[in-house]
Figure 1 (cartoon, one colour):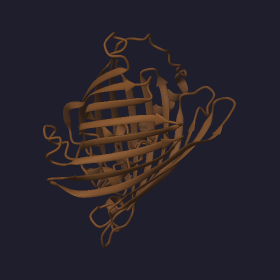
Figure 2 (cartoon, one colour; figure 1 turned 90 degrees about the vertical axis):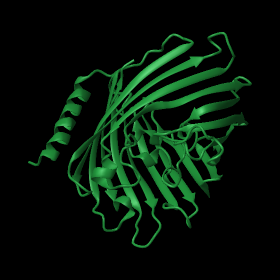
Figure 3 (cartoon, helix red, strand yellow; figure 1 turned 45 degrees about the vertical axis):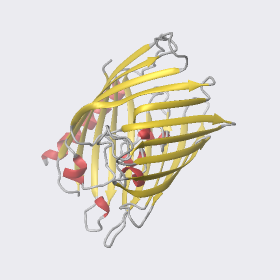
Figure 4 (cartoon, one colour; figure 1 turned 180 degrees about the vertical axis):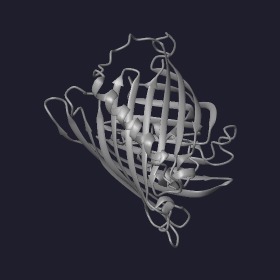
Length: 359
């Protein structure tokens, strides 16, 4: 048996043993504190089982350390929150080296680096009805977020590739300076933000261009628009939309949710003019494992140019909470036309991610 096939079989066997031998974990609430800290470790293997560029395995590892302060509890400014986080990224770059896909089979895939990731202050007003945040901010922590799609590992379920691949937006792995305001009115939430267009240079907020983005959210239905321009940035713009709804809820807590995503940008200048995605997520469907979730979804990015084709990722995944400090997630993706090229062989990719809560 080829060596590259033995790893996913071993990891899957180990995963299943842990799932069914471990007790279900029920979280407990911590006492209120002005300062909270956390250290998370994400470890992941990505193996190309068939097709792609090479049949091999690469590894991604990310350490996230964060400190958050509630200034109200500390007796300073009511409704204020400050946060700083540091990321250490070590990545074998599986999309570039093994798969050849553009969307990113793993949302951890990024150039290796250690840096301050976010550093911001957020002030609330009118008992949380409005907020203002400023600092180094990840745009995708606020805008273009599909809650149920967060289960999936492919990067396009996190943010539409009409933003992530057409622009140098303030997102993972390199957020930049930004200012965001939000307000809630009659069941609607309005968001507006301005970010660096080129976060690679955090010192020049305005000079190298800005990205402006707005979003309206009502009961799981979101619509957004963005525009980018500046001295060294081509003018660009786009739209996105999200519908994210609970489709079924049982008396014992099991639920089925469905979501659809859409993104569009100026087709004349962008590599990816359109994106569509969607999926189903099932949670708490095993009575003894109330924290587990399973999902299936697709992410379809249309490419521009002669000889191009839409890159489509079909993903099936399962997240199992093994203990309060460990979550395991096996994931299988079939990627059609990697890189938007008709001639590129489809790739079958197996990923296994572990999330370790170290502190």
